[in-house]
Length: 320
Image 1 (cartoon, rainbow, N blue to C red):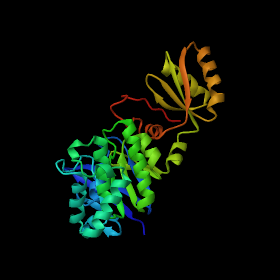
Image 2 (image 1 turned 90 degrees about the vertical axis):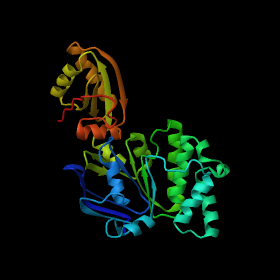
Image 3 (image 1 turned 135 degrees about the vertical axis):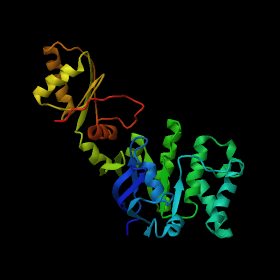
Image 4 (image 1 turned 120 degrees about the horizontal axis):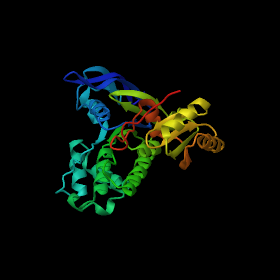
């Protein structure tokens, strides 16, 4: 039995569809990612799956239980780490975990043992008696992950688990997530708008935009949709070069704004040809680079926009 099965899940607020007929399933032991920009519907989807919001239509089962008809059983079998911190800052790390364990009815002897286990898992055992208000943001996030695992959930939900953390702390959190998947035999579903996070952690990724899933596959398969290589060019007239290259039929344009990005096969052998064409029409090539496609390229390929919307604006998208 798959731990998560979602069919046609929809949530409407005053006529606006925040989540629009979403369907997917998650395998046991899988790390499944919902990747998309802020406001895409990721958190709303999670809130329905953890029974905090009632779907407008559709159905979902988590750990084998219907999220509407059997909500209490769903809650007993899941762990949650929300975007916003929910720890009691005045309590110690151990006291926070002890309070949570009591709520889930873990008996006293096992409770002490389990608290020790999860604190060691997230490398906070030596901070057990320290008040949480003295923790860094990364330490608080690790403690919340430990709390989410405390009662042996079948499914753990991580909603933007590294939001607001610095790059080094974010990577440490990734290591803890991968380790706990192996040690705890838990299925994980996470939301993120960090491209590298989805690529690093997820066995499969559902790209979500405007409330709908627009692509779902393994990260490597999604990136193959873009092509083998991406060539990035900084030139004095990107639009003119794009039109010239369109005539040559040697590429697919991924992005055209202040730079030109092309999806090609055999990028190293294609670069000299592109430079030759540019020189023939009097276009100056100021810089050129070659890289492999990313999930960001996939999102742009499908939507014409970047996932991180605070980045570039008004991207020009051309499809062959």
